[in-house]
Length: 344
Image 1 (spheres, rainbow, N blue to C red):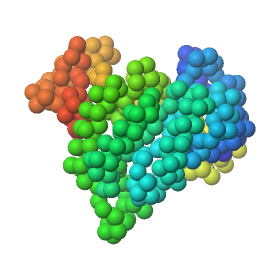
Image 2 (image 1 turned 60 degrees about the vertical axis):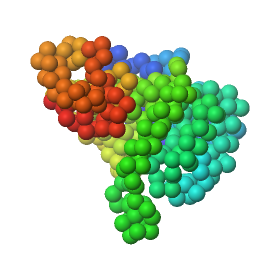
Image 3 (image 1 turned 135 degrees about the horizontal axis):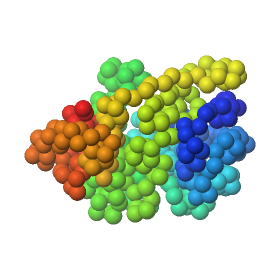
Image 4 (image 1 turned 120 degrees about the horizontal axis):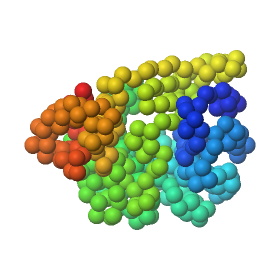
């Protein structure tokens, strides 16, 4: 797999001359923290050979809490990895067992100490809310634990049950309790209030950061910038087209052994590009910039969007601020529905 990813990097044509210059790298999806030092180095070397990587690039590794050890941290740091994202999910033992996580509550806390002691000052943790075992008091304890630990960046997600998963089957068989949407909404509202009081910036629906600690990589997605994706299921984006690799690991490796990148591509129409911008920008604290809509898609598109947004503005779910449409606190509960309604 590692050899195939390195080969894909070498074979990938540049999106444009400007896209040779890389500001962020993100090892995500699956569990990249199980790769050893040599394997991670081979991918990074392939990137350095292909691209011109900024000396101040943000290089993030997603890591399971149980993979974060003092020795692993030193190896990652030596490779140039300067940001970590770890899926802690909860500090409650019973909930971690319910979610079938490999780590326990003690390991969740220990990995934070390990990151600090290794000198990582740029890292993020994930927390999950809205699970049947998590009452409001336990959720408050989870969030307060993160705030007390002075975590620089916190991503919080509502528990979703994907169809045809083991959890989905257990809920349908009445072996586990179903998710309560009202509890999720309430816990999200509580979260926003707690994080604001603690001085965190709520810069995207699911993301909170200390001042200056936003994820540069994820922010580039929400700003609609071009990006390359390497590996099975990886997506790339040029602004006008989207590419995605085959999901099957064996097919991916077999294709690269023949020097073929196995991908599909979709060219985006102007309407799709507009809707893409609406969807991603509405999720951010900056919102949908109507001047940018006008510049990129024309005055009529900006006027139509403002007209469509009017009922949401009257309903206090959206506010107009400096020629931008921004979600209110209550509006953030309806972000997906509002975005769909605003689509051209």
